[in-house]
Length: 486
Image 1: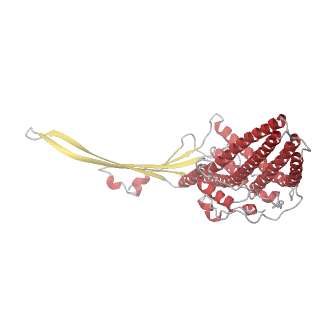
Image 2: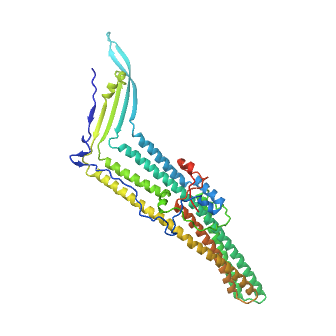
Image 3: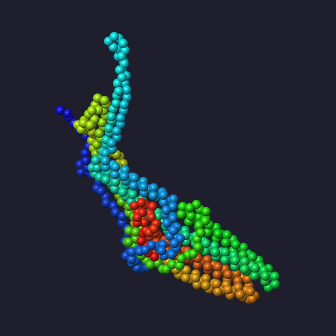
């Protein structure tokens, strides 16, 4: 009768995770992301907005902008690194799931042996014999206290973090592209103002020199006009430099070579007032960076649980099978295989406080993640409140600058007619002309600032990508377009 032997050994000690009444691991600590209290409506507008609707790029009425956002999402190399992180997290999850199953490896060997012995007649006799062997090793950790399951949950949380970070990067890139397009149009508009300034200064210089030739102006007037023209030419060179830099910055976002070849119409949108959307509580469910922070809390809590479970016993079952030519026939005998198995139950007893300290450190980091979540929630609310409030003031600035431009244009026209008639000096004309050009430049700046603020408002709301712009995340590709509002 064959006997089967199953050995149980302990590397450090055998037993449970508690010794007497002392629990070495402690109880599991439940950790949750907690946001500070928030009102039911946006304070800056004192309204409880409806859930965001529509695509936020529509209000700019700029098909070129929508095409650029799509191009940026598809071609920007910066997203490749984040996408690689998502893929790595997905493979890490697959690897963790593999820990639920045994690890099995096999080996084989073969060789030849020659023997020489003396025969009956004293002659040497050679004998050749072949040798071969088969080895099989298996190991498996029983998930006694959920150590393996916790590792899988942690990998899933890390995957959620990486996917949320990718979504946040895509939204940020869409906003950066919209702001970059605004900056390029604003730079071109300012360049056009600078070109108009040079033309205006040239007219004054030509007029002054003709008046000087007829004895109606002084040399001081001529020098002053020439100085104003040179200053305008210097400003134009600076504006052209700014335009090139704005174009190159946007081309980088689009994944293009920065050659300053991107063309724009030098047009800035005239926007309607913001209609506040959603509310502070709703915002937390929309922003991908908040989703990432929430998943980081979950991951930190699972790391703390892993550190706690490191103080619990672990059960590992290993089996090693090695045969040669004489025993290979027994390689698949269940009784023979079972006789080679070893089960090891390991309970840490003393590590100089290392494992307990690692558990406490993981708990502290988890509580830090909760604090970071609360801080990010406050920042998200501030960004929306700032954008709502800023839109009111920027709209007032735009309206005031428009009135200033209209008045300055009238004043310039009057000053030029009076200068031609000798009623005012060249200084009065240059001053009136400067006021008009500055007002035009200030209007461009005000509209650009308001457009930029509008983009930041939708970024703060967690507005999604255009519906025809696929996400780089394969699992989100079918639902890339996020809802938002004007």
